[in-house]
Length: 230
View 1 (cartoon, rainbow, N blue to C red):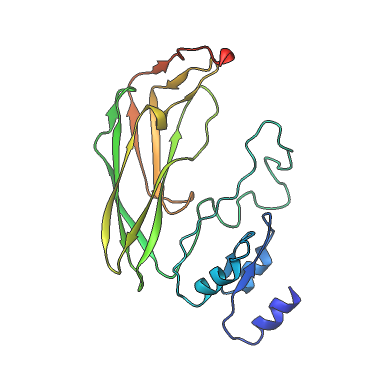
View 2: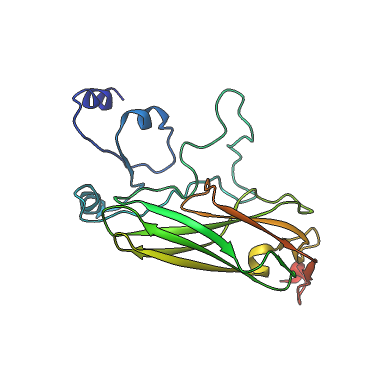
């Protein structure tokens, strides 16, 4: 940090490149550095790849993938609530910047109520509002507002990468059905429960662009082969 602070003191533009094998605490660094490039372990060709990004030959569109391991036997190194620091991550899941900017608008669906066995189409307009062409990852998150078992507040269900020229706008469509709206219930049956669902669309998990719809009935799919015998 002493070196970063010294460089920042020169008041000249600079970029911090992190080559790390695990997530790091960079809260102080983020308040000092104009830009941070996280490469993880880029391999033998990491140098040329980093150079292409720093010199602007490549417009990056990488997204933040980090989250705790979901495996039951993983080491539990994460606590649910901290009492001496914020619970929110410094950068949200799916976050990532490039050399252009994008605007999301006009989120809409073709229905406000559907049956559990049906599907719903969700659309959003995405516009390149920057000065360079580039790619963006359009992310759709679903929340089952009142399920019979605990469900994520925002569950990434589908995403699409699109390319936009400067000033170009595209409509991006998603179709949500039993696969995206359901979950395994306590009997290990795939279930879509009646109730209200929230949909969030944007370029990271903290997007505020949302809509809601209602599923009018419950659908349960019983496995043809008992899971214990598979």
